Length: 121
Image 1 (cartoon, rainbow, N blue to C red):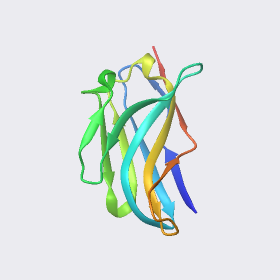
Image 2: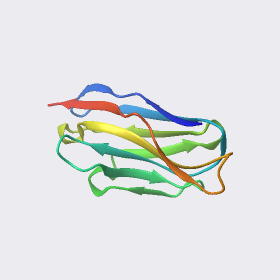
Image 3: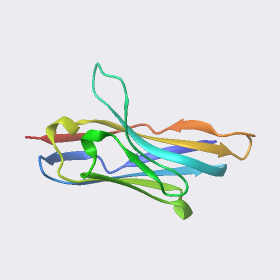
Image 4: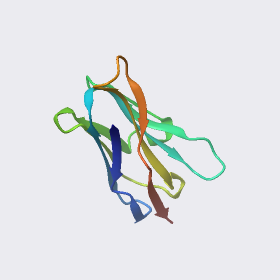
């Protein structure tokens, strides 16, 4: 069994910062890409940022220069540092990871339960 557990969401004023964390646990053989998505009511879930096992990163255009994704491979953890937050960043943020469990021959996609980020104006 593999689980992703997020933490760090909350309410913040515009211009403020939050740091999200996501820990992968369970019977893990290896982890490839890890990333963060977000979703608002009535809209599709969108990619915010992704980081490979080697540390290469990719960002959605609207968060470039404000958000930073990082990971600690020893702790199976991915982070999202969010600075200069705007009201339009308000969403439920989901952690996603491409994980090969001990019981599988290939990687599978896993999602966290989501954490609410609310930015007030």
